[in-house]
Length: 175
Image 1 (cartoon, rainbow, N blue to C red):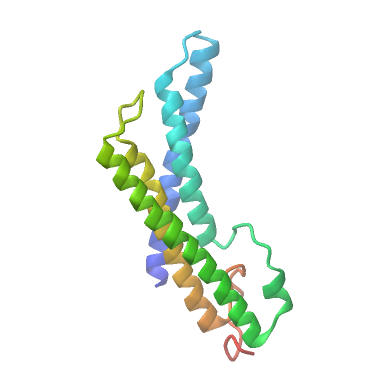
Image 2: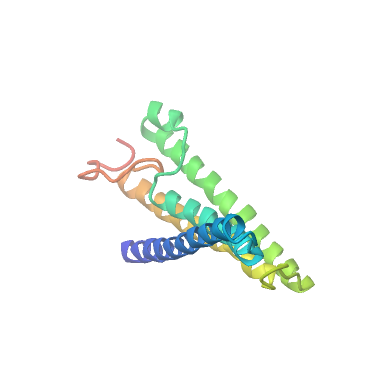
């Protein structure tokens, strides 16, 4: 499982880095063309918008996988034993529900409907369904990370908001 997780992390990191680099180049060119050349580029404006969508969605998935997402962890901190385990399972379940229903199911529906209508972007003439594929892709990554969180929780007692410790807790999650 850790080999798969490292591979998912590596792919996300690579795609995010490339997309962010191109996004920065687009924005720099947009500013240069608008203020120096007095002729703003419509292509880079649209490309930057689409890249921002991809960076935000994939960055959210990557951040979740690194356990660095924003969280209010009051309940997992103040509970112990079985209650803590159940609270963490509920947290993972809520994230998985959102990723599965909203991002994957809703995203696939959006991509399908958009491709079916043949909607294309104004400047780049790209099918908008290709842009929206970032939604179910990031949801799939989040759902995978939820599965790894659940395994970590049951094996080590480590909740979705807890970083790796030096040594696993003795006795499992119910201590």
